[in-house]
Structures are given as structure tokens and as C-alpha cells.
Length: 177
Length: 294
Image (cartoon, rainbow over all chains, first blue to last red; front, side, top):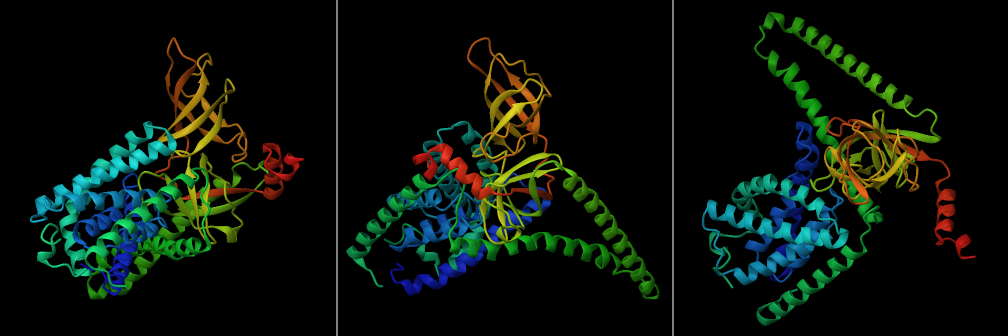
């Protein structure tokens, strides 16, 4: 349990640097190769990693910080992602005894499921705000390939994030309170 | 700060609830047509955007290295000087060709809308929005170049969008293919009015067009000038699909933008003079300004 700010600050700073790197890749480098329609939501993967692996009471604040930095690269803003992230973390805390990221396959599956939950929450918020459901179809068709790529990348990037947050093999969710 | 046990759980619930409520409050407050940023946000965007701009610079640099160094690495030593000369000349020719093509493009851009009473600011696209839900482009000009929020953005082919978010050196353009963008348009041939909304990367939907309007495929759609954002008469696109039923009030029209958004490299930002005075007049007409209250 990381309940002290001094345990969190260095890790979140490194995570933010990594997030900026990924956002630049997604917004400036990938479009160079002609892929302008699909953008990889790395911020979502970072939020899911925090939710799945980190035990701290400040999780909501960390998600807010991640989403705030994401908003410098997207007009999406930080609000909807923060709401989705916090709700997902609450869901994870209820399901923690059922979730064990014990293999690559399971990690991919769990990340994909929580991305689906993210899509449902954000779509609901967009619909409540704009009242236009037609836009959500387009969003869904973007979500399918993007989420699959993110899920496949998840097991490998989680290893990097684990090192940043000093999370060991025994720190998998479900094995600690 | 150190939290443990029951205190930690209580703190977690409290922080989660606070962050959720805080976010919900800002979701409801967020305007969809414009995004005003704080000085800190401007600073952050201005700091990170050059990294994004580095993407295109890196691309040119890498291509240059591959084309002019790696492919020549096997050349015999006797031919090094000659090859270097050829390489330099080829590079120069390539650069000149590129400059010629760019000149042609820019000339075409600047010739566009010569009669319009707007100051034109030429800008390059440096990045796209990092979320695929939004069709936003980031350009390398901002407040310092005289650009203002809600300035129209065009290319020689037609309308691109308007300035949605602005910092000192960069601006985000909400393109007409974004679902949050609304453009008041006219079908040029029959002068039928409608509102265009973004649908996907290459399509817009024209809403509220009366069913009785005799619109046909390939009709040109232009801006009407209503709405105080886009000047009148800018080409938006052509009608690519019509769904007209024997009942109902309106017909469903799909418009293909005349701008190919996958190939846009440079754009022109149209900055109208006297924006402040115009804004005041509009506020007065809307009943928000001091004139309107009198």
C-alpha cells in the first residue's frame, strides 16, 4: 500500500513523462504514416494500470493528473476520462478477488473488458451532454481496433509501469487487501 | 502524509467522491463550441506542441539519412567524392522540387478568396488530436500571429473549420467533420438552407433541409454566413447522398467535404478585422450586451 506521498511523487512524475512521450507518438508520429483516423489511447492504459495494480487512497487524484496532462494533447478534456477512470477503479476494488493478472492472455482479456466499461461510461456521458446517439456508432468502430491494440500492448507495457511504480510479482491485485 | 487502515479507506472514499463530483461539475460546465484555456494550460500546450512539431522534422531527417547516407554506405572509396556530389545535387533538386511544389500550393492558397475582407495567416499542421473521437488539427500559429478564437480556417479547396483552442504559438482547429462542429450551409443551386454536422472523417450530414427542396447529387454546398463564424460563400463540399421519404418534414443529406482531410498540410486562417466591435454588436443583438439591456 502506497499511502505516503513521497512513495507516489517520483513514480507519477516518470509516468507523466512516459505519457507525454506516448501522446506525442500518437498525435504526431503515427499520423505521419497516414494513420490519422485511429489514435492509440495510452492514457487509458496508464489509468487501467494504476487501477489494477496500485493500492493507494490517492488513486482518484492520480487519474485526474493523468487525464489533465492528456487534455494538453486532446480537446477531449480531463473530466470524462477522470469519471470513467474512478468508476473503473471502484469496480476493480469490488472485483479484486476475481482478478488475477497471472498470464499474458488474462491481462489482455481484463484490459479489454475494462476498456469496454470505459467506452460505455464515456459514451453515456457524451450522450447525456449532446443527446446525439449517431456519433456513438462512429466512436464504437474506432474503439474496436484501438482497444485491441492497447490490450495486446498491455502485458508488455505493464512490465514497464510495474518497474516505475516498484510493483513486484506478489503485488498483483487480489493478493493484497 | 501517511494514511493507514480505516483512515485510509475513509480517505479513499472521500477523495473518490470529491474527484467524481468535481469532474461531473466540469463536464456540465464544458462548452462544446469553444474551449478557453488558462495561462497554465496555454503554457503546457505551448511547451508540448514543439515536441509534436518535432515529429515532422524527425520524419524529414530520417528520410534524408536513409536516402543520402545509408543507401550509399556500400559505395567504393574511389567514388565517395563523386557520389557525395551527386547526392548533394540530388538533394538540392529534391529540395527545389519540394519548394516549387510548396510555392505552387501556397500561391493557390493565397489566391483563394481574394475578395474576402479577412487577414490571411498561413499555417502548417503539426499534429492531430490524440483521441480519435475528435477531428482536431493543431497548427503552428497562435495568438502571436494575430489568430483569434473562432477564426475560420480554409484551404484552396474549401472550408476546414474554425479555431477552437488557442495559445501563444499554436491553435487547435475544430474541423467540419467533427460532430461538435455546426456550419450553416446553403445548397448553391437551389439556395436551400441547412445545418452541417460532422459525421466521420470524410462525411458531414446536412440537417433541417425541407423535404420539398429539389436537391440532387453533386450539388455544391457553401457557407451561408449565418452564425457569425464563417464568411459567406466558402465551398464546403458536394452532396453525395440523399434520403428522401414520401413522408416527414425534412430530407437526409450527406455531404462529402471538398477538402481532403487526409492530405491537408497547410491551411489559411481568416482573421476578420474589428472582431471586438463585431462581437459587441452581436452581444447587443443577442440581448447580452449593454446596448441590448437598454
